[in-house]
Amino acid sequence: MPLPTPIESPLSERELVLVRETDIPAAKLYAGWTQPDLLVKWFTPAPWTTTACEIDLRPGGTCKTTMRSPEGQEFPNVGVYLEVVPNEKLVFTDAYLPGWEPNPNHFFTAVLTWETLPSGKTRYTARALHWTKEACEKHASMGFAEGWGKAFDQLVELMSK
Amino acid sequence: MPLPTPIESPLSERELVLVRETDIPAAKLYAGWTQPDLLVKWFTPAPWTTTACEIDLRPGGTCKTTMRSPEGQEFPNVGVYLEVVPNEKLVFTDAYLPGWEPNPNHFFTAVLTWETLPSGKTRYTARALHWTKEACEKHASMGFAEGWGKAFDQLVELMSK
Image (cartoon, rainbow over all chains, first blue to last red; front, side, top):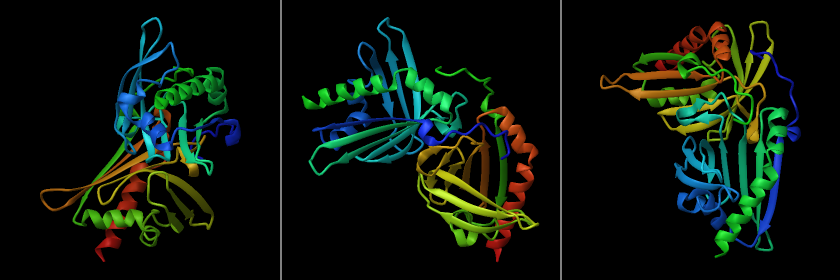
């Protein structure tokens, strides 16, 4: 390799996975992830809120969100979509900024899928993939499972209305 | 940021650019980059050769090539396409392995464009974007400009026949 080779961990040590099943159809869950007017209503686990969202839904397009803490501090975020399969799959990452500029502070890549099961239920799988084991452990300790789980519950509640 | 923040360099310090103009139409240059039977004929600066090529041309699809040194040693490579705009633009990276698995040994992202100029000539721009200044400098010292320039000349020669 052209650069000093970092210690490699198998993907299983660099991956966090959340799986949920729900009666909400895949198309509605996908809509919640891809329509800004819906996304702002569920994306951040309460008492945090999402105060702005812009989405350019195509490979290389960006998702810009602003999250607000309970104390009122705002945190802008930007991610880039890598793969878009309507109602089935969405892949995005912070490894790039707009225009495919590599982001030196890259952290993870999300692979989301929605499968319709024989029972009619939808299985949602969220995988967070990291370049290093250390980033993965950090993400776990930041509360990936709780945060993404709570956000999912908020999306299901929104779409149940 | 969730991880220790590396020293950030502006993109200009993490980018290598090669620009060439040619009479070969954009569609033919793009074909050379995307059709395996053509790619193997020009991709590696002689006396190196490309002995195998498989292409799955879509965002998330892979490009697998095998390069052979003059001494006969073979080097397999795999990259993932990020953006595919027929005859105009091709973006790929080694930051991912198949299935969006983050590659711990990621090195660079290539953004290639082909523009038809008012003169009828085609302007080819190859940008190599890196996550760190160090990787960019390494790439330059490995001979990016010479290697990619020579490969381009080989493609033009092939398409001139």
